[in-house]
Image 1 (cartoon, rainbow, N blue to C red):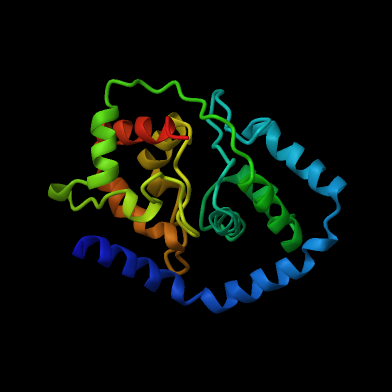
Image 2: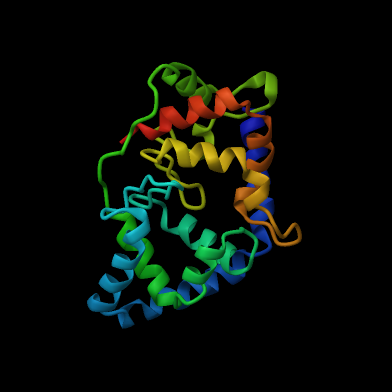
Length: 219
């Protein structure tokens, strides 16, 4: 319980410095949402779905594209801002994100939140038991807290903490394995995902694959 509490406190400290600005931005964005027409929204979501799947369920190819369906709007907003500000490294998503108006950002995140396709699955079921244990109980010997303490017992996320349920297992594996190469690129301007850096670092490859397999098959 002490570990879980300290991890939550760390997140609060990380995001506190930007909370007032974020709230002001969110209010402005929500005030402008009415200016996004249904036609504009469809054009933009159709564009997103060329990579992320026709129902936002993710897509497997040479590079796994993450599931956006059911994702927490606040998390998507934060990550798109991280792409724009080069705190998260992805040239393709920078080009996508930096042209979005605040109103379109709110409309898009709301649209994807309401999608609920079945998980694509395909991960091996051999290590689901280990993955479930790590997700629910953590790994005390490695100071890894339960994933559920932030992502929820059903892995559906909460606010800034992303939904993991139904996420592509190969995408989760890639992100956790390469965390430092993509996330936290601006140490002076961190976001809530900073909390995951030591956790990703302390998980072994076998443990990462187990957790990824477990969350990928959750509805």
